[in-house]
Length: 282
Image (cartoon, rainbow, N blue to C red; front, side):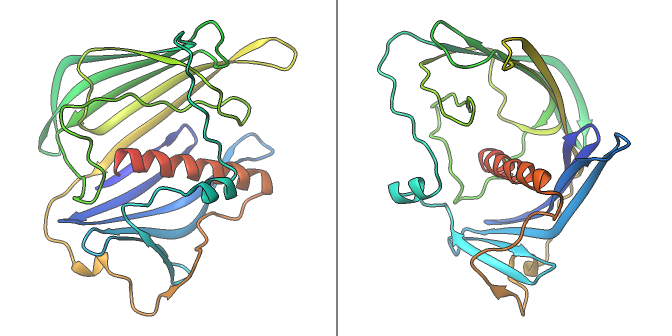
């Protein structure tokens, strides 16, 4: 399958191959820069490949342009305390307060609309997520709406994490000025959560935030995901092998070489994308 995603003026795509307990994802990192005339320029990095092999218990990342690759255990092992500290990460202490400071509301509505996509029947589902700060919260109000068409397509490998059947959980990411605030969160969910695979989705977000002078502003964003190709058939086993002549290294170059500011933003984007990709098992 080939998946294109991004926002107006800035998009990227990746291609995924799955055969049994092996997965290959081809992609390129990219960074966007605003030119003096106001137009948006996309700068691409090297051609990259991620290969997951359950039979080997490994995940490989390849830089095709440099003929280099890295290797790591899969599933990944939890970070040790020393590794967490070395990366400058923070683990917030558990909040023992019984009074909630943040409310997260999730509403899922199946519109009842159906249509055929890639020879499969897709359902139209709209999911709304609201973040509502309560007394004592350091968070800002947010609202995200995902309007999408889903099909039943399980692309997980046997070595991917599988949530225990019958159990449910809520997750969220929260940061304030680069720190992880302590929030006591209460969740409210209505409708049946959608667990299918999105062939087309449009996510719009409204995030309010405070300026240094005390005024408040709202930032709106729009991210679209579209599967442009979905095929079934035999695959060449060589797709899931390290090509001859590739050198094993400790680190491969993933990012393009834009300005320093754009490079920092791209690094943050890649970390966020890697996290989302892991959560969605893409």
